[in-house]
Image 1: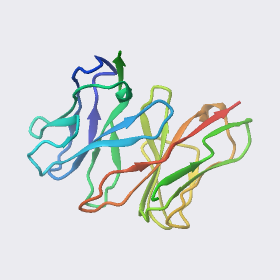
Image 2 (image 1 turned 90 degrees about the vertical axis):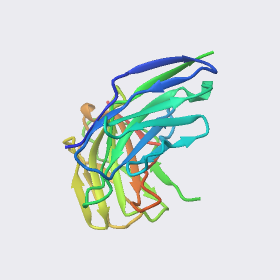
Image 3 (image 1 turned 180 degrees about the vertical axis):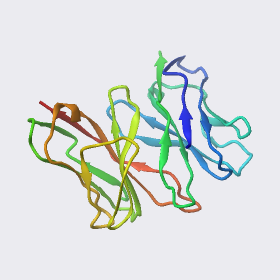
Image 4 (image 1 turned 180 degrees about the horizontal axis):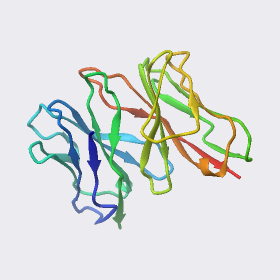
Length: 116
Length: 114
């Protein structure tokens, strides 16, 4: 069975600095998708960035980028130039969208605090 | 605007009452999901559906039930609410394809059973 592990329950970063959130996963599949979701306090969960496993190039969305290491089964999120609005819970998620299995498997989350 | 909606946002109800949490999406997604989010913020899948008349239990056992009579609607029902059901419930949908593999989430229903 697939698993997703986020080993950092909480992280802090100074405003304008860079922070990296860690995520590891376990799967025997070769084709899958990985996501980082952001859940601000009392607000809707939204997608931050996605990575297709067949793509070697790391995904980037403005200040957000990932370091995808397929062999190591590692998928970390780097937030550059951190802003107060980045404070939220961040969830790493795995999705294997074929073979009739469409569930999303989430990690336990990392609470990010941004210090002014 | 395509979206996914949950009602109510907040619900406080007495023990033993029957409740239904509503979830609707306007994106035409086949797949829909219910997650329970505990105080530690971890997400637990309790129900999912791959289409009309398809429902499956998730990884976390739940006393709730779901139905999928229409593509856009995936309500969750608790026949007799108990304090242990107090939690946040998140509904999500997805349309697995080459370009759209993410799950879209509703704003959640925070349920308190007193």
